Each structure stands twice: as structure tokens, then as C-alpha cells.
Length: 408
Image (cartoon, rainbow, N blue to C red; front, side, top):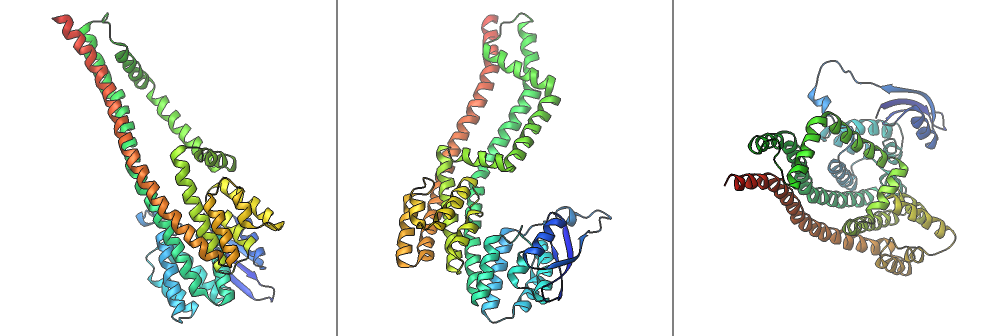
């Protein structure tokens, strides 16, 4: 994503400069308009591309989740200790090991130094600081409890990162096995089976009657050998098209709806999404953000389009005077415990504290579900690989056994 530098004036006529990591100039203009700034000039910044640099080749444009969580916690500690915000940002910018965070902190520090609020400075980098982050910081600045809000944010990010890592860890083993299986299958079809086919034809002669399984495997091998230059690009093209389609709004909605129908995956996705909803909504409510605004921000951060649509519909119901717990209760996407705990929170006025308990409960459930999925995937993959090896071995050994019997 390109980096733009801009010069603008605020309503008082004061000149403000800064940078924005957005898609195009129109996006920068929209961002400045929302901040009640009038753009004077907007220029795209380009980096020198002369020479080859491994650092540039592998340079990350976005802040990694772990680096963002560490930055948030360190900023919370420094602000809580009484360090002025500008001094804290300068210190963190100098000592951070993340190139992406260092680059963004330079722009944020300049904006804060120029008189912008921290939340407004963070809002210029929506790819790294989402709506939840920006709105919570804005609420913390308004209430004078920025250190406490940042601490909550850091805890939320650490919880999200922990779940993300556990999911990746659970999926690493089956992904590696599937990759090895596919590569091994293609290698057998392209190199091994053709050689075995020649040996069988030499031993049995051109009129040899081979078993059905062997003939099927030889046909598949002949197909791959004769058309591999067509098959491989077609398979790659199909994968690319499916990936791009899933990124479109219509494709993403269909994909998210599909995974919510898969027996085991549905349970895990539901628990992850409910935990994300409960923790995000709780943190926003605890920061003093209004209910409707908290619901809107939470809807866009749950990560599933179907749940996002359900929460947006919930906003309209709450606007009409209905209680949030009752609206959630009639939605099949949310387990009954969510509406019941929300009702308790509404009665006691401690919705944020009650939802934290819901988030903790479902995050523990996610760990159990992921462990169960891992224990289920491993034997399943072994069976699939063993079956594939058995089929190939049988297709090779059956004709050899038949030829040996004929020789006898």
C-alpha cells in the first residue's frame, strides 16, 4: 500500500503535516475530511529502488500482532508512570525492533507534536490500528484514563494472538501432511508409475491383461505425463480464482456461510467469534463508548460476515428500544449463555465485567476444541495417506503376482 505525505489546515487555520498509509489520494482526502482538516497538498512518497537489498525484499509493511501488543503494553506502562505522551512515543520509536512500527511511529509522533490527538494520529493507519483500537484510545483520552485503556487493549491483543497461534499450530501438522501427500502423489504419477508400466509391459507383453486397479493408475499416470503442462497451470489457476473470489464481498459471505455448516469447524468458529464479540464489546463498554457505537465497531471486528450482519441487525433492534439481551436471545448464531449473561449485566449495570467472563469461558472452550480437532485430524490423515500408499502398492503388486503365477 502506498505511503502519502500531506499538508492540511485545521478549522483554526493551523497547518498540519503528516503521513498516511492508504490505498489512494481519495482515501487520504476522505480521512482528512473526517478529521475536519482541509488538504493543501498530497504527495505519494516513493523509496529508492536502486540496487538489490534483502532487507527491502523481506520488509514487512504491516505491524506484526506481537509487536503491536508489546507497543501497547509499553505505552500503557510509560503513560501510567507519568511520562509525557510525546516523550513516550519518541522513546518507543527509537527502541522498537519492528521496521513497520518504527516507520508508523515517526508519522504518529509528528502528528502528536503538531497538536493532533493520539487517536486521530492512529486513525491515519487503519491497516494497523483498527476501529476498536482507535475508538478505545479516543475514549481513554477523553476520560483521562489512557493508561488503563491501553492496558485493556494490550490484554485483548495478547488473548487474540494466543488463539491465533493455537489455531496455526493445530493446522500446521495436517497442512504439512497434505502438502507431502500431494507432492508424493504427483511424483509417483509422473516418474515412478511410468517406469513400472514399462516393466509390466515388457514382462507380460503387449496383450497382458492387467487388473482394473492397475489400469486405472496407469491411465491417471499417462494423463499426468502427457498433459502435466496443462494440468498444473489449470490447478494453479483454479486455486487463484477461488482465493480471489473468497476475497470479494459476495464470495466471502458464501465462504463464511459454508464453514458455519461444517460439523466440527462450525463449533470452533462459533466459539472463536463469540469470544471475540464478548471481549471486544466488553472492552469498548468498559472504556465508556456508547452501546450502539460499541456494537457497530464490534460487528466489523468479529471476522465473520454472517455474524457481522447479525450484529448490524441487532443495532437496528436496539435503536427501536429493545434490550440487547432479548435481541441476542432470538438469534441462533449466539449460544444461550451469551443472552443470559447479557441480561445479568443489564440488570446489574456491569455488562463489561460479565462479558469478560463469557470471553474467558469461550477462549478456554476454543483451546479444548482445537485440541480435539488436532487429535481427530492426525489419525484421519494417517488413514488417508496409508490408504493412498496401499492403493498404489496394490496396483503395482497385483500384476506382478499374476505374472509370477503364470510363469509357474
